[in-house]
Image 1 (cartoon, helix red, strand yellow):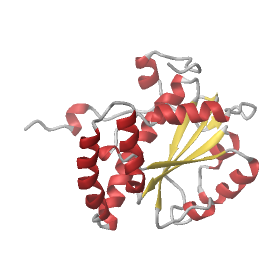
Image 2 (image 1 turned 90 degrees about the vertical axis):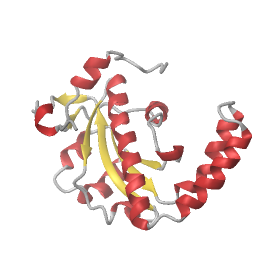
Image 3 (image 1 turned 90 degrees about the horizontal axis):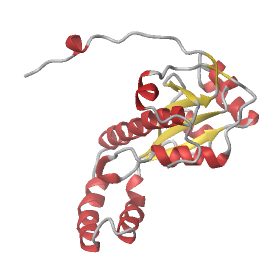
Image 4 (image 1 turned 135 degrees about the horizontal axis):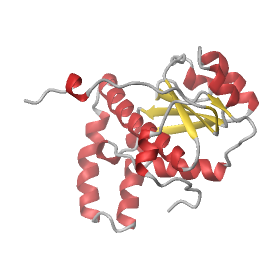
Length: 212
């Protein structure tokens, strides 16, 4: 279990979550704990375990200044948060497929022959995806890890705000990434809450569900 876990109440983590936009500017998250939270978040599922998510943690004043004009009306989160976590989907995630499956064999979680069979089927399949198909896969998978990160952050005593309003065509290049390969999925602000998030409502399950 994480040594930095301060909240292990499942119900409070899930149902107490709100989008927080104002943070305590004096609180900085160590690289060790940030990596720990990212590692924990990546237990989220992904298609054939290709783990297409990639993270850029924007924490310095210089880099936050670079991000600020790209996030439209979300500048308060950028100004006050401990960090802004940029989540990208890697359109060539299959390049790490062999590393992933080799690790599974080394850790005794998969027989070598199963690895070989899986990779022989998966890698060509992924390479043959259209750009639109791959875009859908990496965005779905990266959204799963983003939600998991938000909940992990609460378990560590932090709050977050998922941000979709940003200049998606400029984000990758602004931080030194190939914009054709790395698709921006979401930005998460993270830090210690200073201003409580708003309470909100949800539609009734009966209104949005059909049984067939």
